[in-house]
Image 1 (cartoon, rainbow, N blue to C red):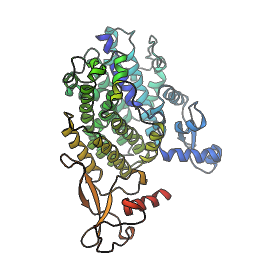
Image 2 (cartoon, helix red, strand yellow):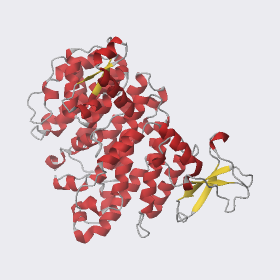
Image 3 (tube, rainbow, N blue to C red):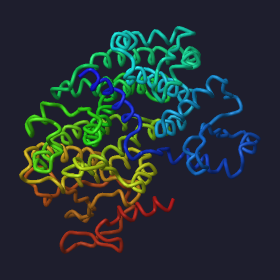
Image 4 (tube, helix red, strand yellow):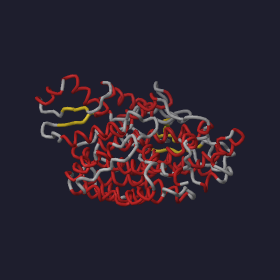
Length: 498
């Protein structure tokens, strides 16, 4: 069992940092900046006193723009740091892009943070290292950051260069501000202990599932949040609220575990908690048998419902962010996750092959998820998709409806979404109250409402946004040339044009 489970943390760690279909994420703002600079040429940008973009990826130009690093004339990098960015691009397709879109010195701190955890993860993943050697290495790995000459040259893993050239990484680590060093070393220490704990243990209960996901993903979220605050790009509360940061990681991790059921089964790995799957089969592998597809999908739906419990924390966390590059960095994986969960929910394909969102859909999500209003609209859209697929006979249907309703209310808690592309707006309609004032009819999809009930809220938009309702409104519904979306779609059309 030790051999079978030795790959647990690494497989999850890799999937956490490179979620599913988001193979080429990047912030729209950085893409536009890179595009304009490439059209003028970097030297012209320098002459004009603007930041240039230096690319360390060997991808084609269209993809390379996702891997560009903003550097100013004063922000020249050492040879060691350039090497670290090269390792970053070699070991991560998706994470490298969003790291290199971060602002200022935070970019370098997160780059080193990633490489340190990648090195730790490579030790854990190496099946040729005996447990007698591996466990002490995992326990003590954080101390190697302060040993200038420490390296490990016996790994057979594909990412072994981060261990063989660890002195370069540790040197750049020690060049970071002390506040960054303390965060990275602390998370490295805790993750190493967690990896060692689960080397020979399977995930039994839901509490253990949360604990395991905390070690391999929640700690990453906590560490990143502390780095955000340490950089002063974000407020102190972002790094202090460990519960929200942990939920950010757990939501991504659980999504990947759920989606990758079949792949993990084929590789001899098991990550679904026994407490759940044992209600639907004698063995986890039994769920892949055609004759067990009904209980298999019910098990799947229960786990999706569990993962959705983290969405309220995700929305609250993102609402606190004020730096655009940090927001993009955090929001893109989360919207990819909710889209992936919606694709997986009640889907037999999870047990037959690969479930993933379309590339075009992924690109659209990356381009849209640039503000909290848009993210709320995206969350609303995909939990509504889940709601539409809830089977009445599903054992978890009540809990699924409850969390869907909660997420929808949170998504609309500050009024209807504004300033977002019209395609993201849910199917809402504008109505007039008795005084002829516009109201928004919001579908209530909670238990027992069947999708037919509505509540009304007064949109937080200026009076110039609305056309005049002409009482009596007949059915009390305002109409205009934009159809049932009313003035909100008209406002969105203006936003799109801008």
